[in-house]
Length: 150
Image 1 (cartoon, rainbow, N blue to C red):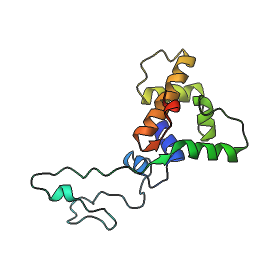
Image 2: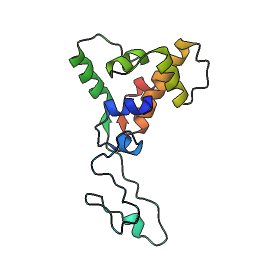
Image 3: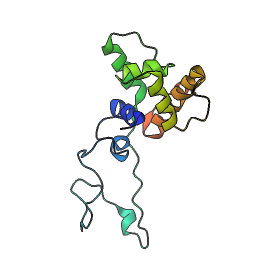
């Protein structure tokens, strides 16, 4: 499992599309895909009007449920008892989530997120990582305040 998938798993509910679409949770409850060769959609799958339109075989675009990332992380911070600056520090964010915050892990995360800067400049990489993780959380259905994305 990628480091970013682990971050998603810690912040988003396990049945959230950000987790199930990334393959982060194997066998998650109520997956929207039908088994190969299946004639009908599985129970619990939302109606798909776009598949009934003439010539349209693309899956419907359903809005992703929003998760208040700030509220989730603040609650985790409150129950952790530790004083972590997750709002600006990727190291503290990873620690809050119970993930490896080592330089090697951050370099791996930088690679996953296509960081093009010098990974030996850990300060610049860390600032970029924090901003990029917050941006990616927002892209995956997270409600992230603008000040955390910049």
